[in-house]
Amino acid sequence: MESDDLNSKFYIDMSTARAIQVSITHVALGIGVGSTIEGLLPKYSETSSLQQQLFEVLVQVGLNGAALSSVASFLRNDDPTFGIPFSMALFEAQPELAVRIRSLSAAAKAMVVQSVQQKVALK
Image 1: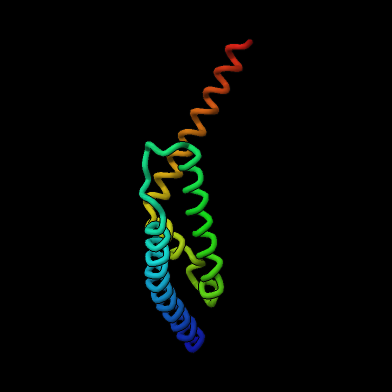
Image 2: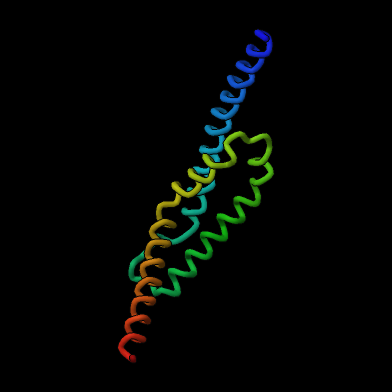
């Protein structure tokens, strides 16, 4: 019984060590990929048209999808973190993507509110 407990403890320690190693590697990879994607796009501008903002979001999200596709096999190989550190770093390395998404969400919300108000006014 002691041998099983020792083996179990060793396995937990080794899997924790592997998770730490993978987390560090994937965060570094996520920062590198995210920074590259963000650097390829123009700086966010509030004065850009809604169509321009939508285009920039779609391009940036598409580049994220392409990046995920290209590293997916690497991320799946015995990954005890399930890609969470990579995804977190990838998104956080792109603060302008978050701004673009918030801006488009606010515009969509405003359109919905306006549409509802117009329908209510017609009744």
